[in-house]
Every structure is written in structure tokens, then in C-alpha cells.
Length: 366
Ligand SMILES: [Fe+2]
Image (cartoon, rainbow, N blue to C red; front, side):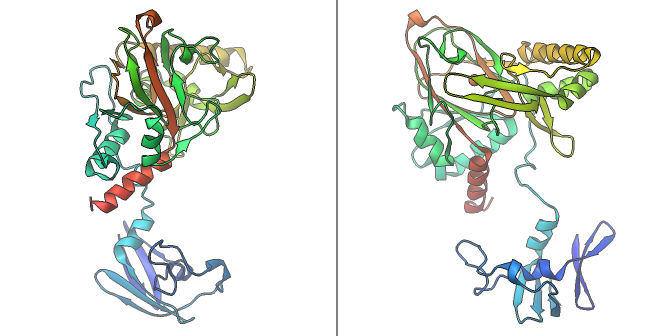
């Protein structure tokens, strides 16, 4: 990739193809003190108010910089590196490769919490692990009631839902969700009926005196890759059929239609939804439904298989942060008569973790 000049025009050359850069694109990137606020990097002018036929008056290209003077008098000096970055349409997070894992995973991505952790380079390492594995566990997080809110807001901001700013996970009478019982919970993703689905779930263990109640995690990315390879028809139908996920209680009716395996515009993994207590497939041809039911059964078998699940006990002070678009979580049953089991949970969205990761990358020049 490189920049070239010819006849007062700027060209971008990439893999043998050469294209002109629109002069307006350069003009709206004018970055002198009169044009951009240095602190926020926000424009001090409105590009929609500029004349459309912006023309270049003169150009100068050096090794690292492109200087442009426009006929309306504006001048700018742009770093070549920054121009090239914009052409590659890079989302830095997408470039963090996901590590596929299964039940053989031994290192559970533990990080020890300490003062000023959120501005520390170790937090950058933790977030990097989060994007690689889809989960991390912070140890020794203060077990003060509601500390989870401080924690979440130190990364970004809490995503409030109808369960409140945060929720308490312990068995209680007349629960509106099976999470609030001592029953086992099979692997599932949370809130598939919400639009958008909360991206990240945080669970903070305050008390755990019972011998059961192990937390379980399954990598939906690993499982869907397996399905794609070994059962392509099943994979295909689960990426195509939108099913209705719903949640109903006395105060609200939540519904959303989505594929169980959602792909991005390039056909790559984007998100899984799985909660067989809450999904309703539309009425389709019998043959198609036959295939759909068989596919759902197969993916359920894989999600529930011993081959993919890691199981561990959360101790007081442990805080599990997991990607609710990628991982499934659950827990084994416990006996509430053995003692207290008390977890607090909340959600945050990807903009929080992405923003924090990019901030720490910039701060530590990584
Ligand atoms: Fe859950």
C-alpha cells in the first residue's frame, strides 16, 4: 500500500490497483488547530457546509507525510500511516484471533485484582485474553455488596435491563427465572430475547458455602466450527432460520427473532443464541422443520457434551467476565440447605471493553 501524486491528484495504490482519493475526503481531514480541537479530536467545522467541488491547489509528499493546500485556503499535513490505516478498514478487536478451546482447557485465564487495576497494563492483558478466549476470571475482587457496579463502571458502563442495574443470583421463593433456584442450569446464553442481546455478563461470587453449584462454560465458537465441519446441513439451517426468543413476566413481554448461529457479512462467526426454554421456530414446511429439529438436537448435544465444557467452582472474591455472544454458561445443581450461595451479576456491552482496550493500548504504547 502506498500513496502517489499526479497532476494535483492523490492516488492510493494497493496490490496493483490504483485509485484516486477524493479531494473532499482529504479536505474533511484537515487537522490544523483552527479545524480540529486538539483534546477531543473533534472537528471545529461542519464538513456538510463545505462546497462540494473542493479542489487541490498544491501537494507535497514526503516519506511520512502528505501536505495538501486546497483552493479554499485550507492546509493540512496528514501522516501517511494514518491515511493507510483508514483504507484497510481495521477494527483492531477483530484482529485479535479467537482461540478455540474445549474441556481440555486448563488455564482459566485468572488475573489478580489490585488497586488501580483498571488503569494498569495487566488490565490490557486481561482484556486481550477476554477477546481470545471469551472469558476471564478476576481473583480477590472485594466482596463488598454491589462492588460489581463499581467494577463494571470502571471498565465502561453497566447495561441496565428489566432485571435492574444488577441482579442477585441465589435461590428465592417464586422466582421469575430458573437462575433463581438451586436447579441445574444447562449451557445457555443470556437474554436471547433482547435486542440488542447484552454482550458481556459479569458474575461476582460473594458467598459460596455449598459443595455443588459449579459454574460451567462452553465455547460456542468451537462448537459451531465443529458443527460446520461435521454436520454442514445442520450448521447451514441454524445460520439461516430466525427463531423467536421470548421472555414473559408480569411486567414485560420481550421478543426477538434471530438465528441460533449468526454470521457476519463475510460469513464468519458473529454470535450464538441458545436457550431451549425460550425459543420458538416459525411454522415451516414439514421437511424443513425436520432438518431444523435435527440440527437443534445436534447442537444441543454438542453444547451439553463433556468434550466442550469446563467446570469450576467460583470462590468468594472471584469475578467471572464472559462473552455472552460467544460462550454458553450454566451451573450444576446444589443443595440450598448446605449453606449460602450468593452471586451478583450485571451486563456490559462491547463498546466498554473495546474502548478500554484501545485506551490502554494507546496509554502503554502497545
Ligand atoms: Fe444465565
